[in-house]
Image 1 (cartoon, rainbow, N blue to C red):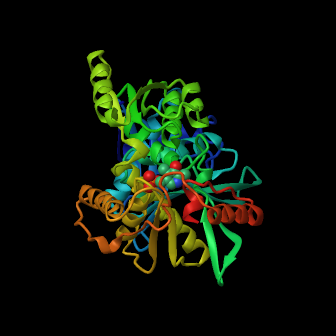
Image 2 (image 1 turned 30 degrees about the vertical axis):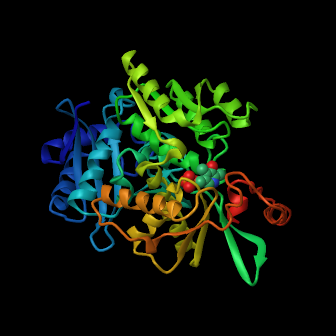
Length: 449
Ligand SMILES: *Cc1c(COP(=O)(O)O)cnc(C)c1O
């Protein structure tokens, strides 16, 4: 689509007047209507030299179709307000506004080096809200009875978009569909310590969990490339496979799961994966890796373009998901004026822990410790895998590696391995369920807690 933006010029005044005076366009605009030529020319001459605003024209296939710009450009706080109107009515709904906004955001973040672009939209202006939400703007609040439009007091939403989200290509448009998962303070207390819990189990895809948070980023990577099916692996009880099967089904992508033969009992996760249309290939545990290679080769031979996701969502994209989660935790702290001394988590493949640690490194935020409680691996191997994931990620960001001092990986609770549990863990799970109504599980969260 050929959309460009350029600076507003005197020759654009006639178009602006026509567009703004068009009743199909101006319901939510706050101009002194009708616009007239002399006054608009005067407005143009008064404003053209100002550095606290940027007015531009949107062109579609070389023809002017609307206006866009930044108001109240604040160099000190590095923010500005965005506005946009597509004036040519028959060209609405074609995605021109979206493309033009992206171009203006590039200008705002890259050229003006702003940190934040915000806007106000009347509560009833649902079309604008959808547009900005699709672009990754976050609704930050409702301002009651905020302006007068046609003699009536109306409320407006304020939306904002941040530079830090702009540069994570692809991820944004997916991730921002969802609010941060909640953080609750528990009634449970121990030795005078208070506990908070981040409810990633409420992550809103397919029963949630860290696999859902990771999977969403993998699917935005898939969407940005040329792929037409997905291959992954996991056990019969894998949360990861369930979530991947769910997202693949939602995108109409065939999903192939490689799984080692197990006790034959069909878990709820496996039932769901099958229900969601995933194709499961069973093999002996020693042959998982070669079965994956064979499956990928077979698909390619048949003309497919498979996307491969490591078990558990392991890899830099999975790590990124928990860098994002770390950001959410920091946001919560800022909003609530609190600082957590420790973050504890259940550590399996170590991607979740690696993401949190990378978030800490990126923020230079070393006043707390992140403690991974191993649910299966023993040290030194388990801790080394976390460290490798951290360094893989840092290298991908052009940063230097860290040493093992950054990793706290504790294997004291592994017991007899994956999924094993004891009476003290069961007592803890029961206590949290009774006091806080939150169900922990015996394999991961119960052990870590
Ligand atoms: C997979 C999983 C973990 C472990 O996450 P890793 O990133 O593999 O360390 C923890 N809790 C739950 C519920 C999981 O499904």
